[in-house]
Length: 241
Picture 1 (cartoon, helix red, strand yellow):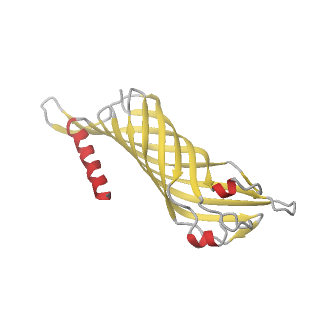
Picture 2 (cartoon, helix red, strand yellow):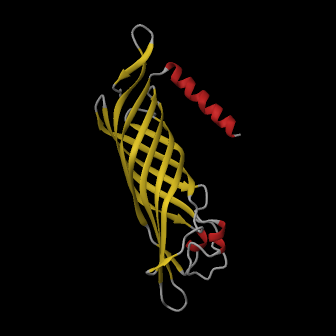
Picture 3 (tube, helix red, strand yellow):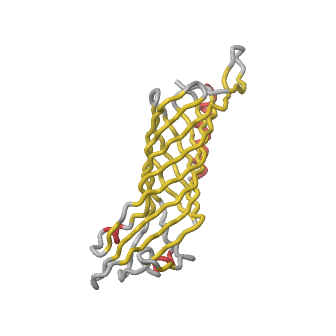
């Protein structure tokens, strides 16, 4: 199945690049917005209250565009995600549970430009967790072996060109990201994570999510285009319509 998908993707790229001009762009990117994890068991439990936390990330983006309507965007962003959860047992006290994980996100997105000045994007995100920590109140919670080292998410977004020139474009976009795998390990589930203070018998799946607003500055590096002689070759600069 994977080989079939890969072959289909290769044929698609080849078919649109054979006749179209191919352009490469590079630049910095920053994004921020709500992030955390979703656990339906905890969300529906009257003793738990969710907090909406903001995440930030920054890094580099590379775009490979085929003609005027198709492209692929590859991004590497480093950032920090948060999730605060308040547990209110029947004793009348409350315990604040905080999870923080530092990540390196790798995006591989297909972009479609239906008209001048905007784009739609879809694809996967692979997250590598560099460091993770958790506290219950002010006490640190052991996390070794309780959380995964990485996870996969699906990404859907929309964006627009804010301004630009022949070689430089400023873009803004809105993305929704939702995890396709659980962030808590099997051992972590058995040990009562992520709400370590809860007396629930089972907490179910814990899925990371993110909604982000991103800004990127794309520099046109160059590409392969057909010259007046009919031959295809590399030219400097980029072209935006």
